[in-house]
Length: 367
Image 1 (cartoon, rainbow, N blue to C red):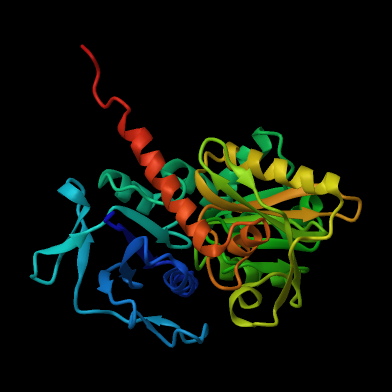
Image 2 (image 1 turned 180 degrees about the horizontal axis):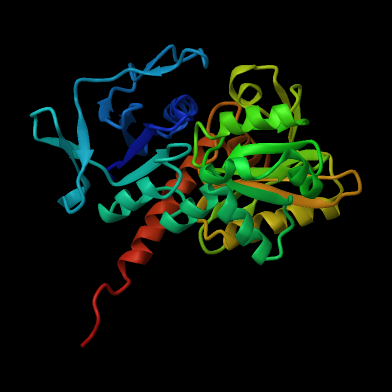
């Protein structure tokens, strides 16, 4: 009998997207093929401590996105670089806490999606789902991401970057003379629309900057593109494929955190989006071009604005997109013929294939 693959699902984390990660983990646990995979749940609390969790009790208020929380266990663990066999080390006095074959990180935002966790997993020589250090880091930082998109000739909204120490050196008029009004203020390194504000006057700009600088020391102020919000999922390593595009039709002023994860009526998803064949082809091609330009692997969701005259702009790329039951990434693949459980399977296989490929690279010089 073939041994099951041991998958470590890494979730929670220190970022403001902690609760989103809990929802994503729950959906993966519910859907993963348990005849093929043994799962090890590794929950990270908001202080950064790692815990082994039981699948039946790892969440509190699991069905309420407003109250959902990590149920901390008494078994604290760590993944130590250099430990043989991908062993988890117990910090609770019990020694060996088991081993894993591959990690599926569903950590959204800083400390999970920004290259930090990917670096730890790479040092520990553990295969893991999703982009490596570089792809994760540049995709997380909206400033660097947009610079790379521009360099690759990929259309993206005009933006201005503001650092904490220079926040008082630019006026609302100076910003809107370049970007127009309204505009959006966003923390450079965060997702799920946390800390994002739509700005239409000077007072709102001051409030928006105050909000955004709570989450990051760098803020992106971005041109508002009036158009439809279209999303496209990407899957693969060297030769990625793109899903059918879907449309987000928000009932809020914009696609906010509440609309995404709290208000079940906050947005409607049109899958597939009603677009001409030419625009669909353009979006899919741009999604793959963006994925490659940002050095991504495994998975990503690319978000677009499509104007009334069918001009397509890339808004951003998420290297660890949401995996909740209402998330676009798995829904788009389901509409493209890849069901949720199969999608998880493909992502794990992509992680194992990449690790095997990288393990064949030389690590010393022939002198």
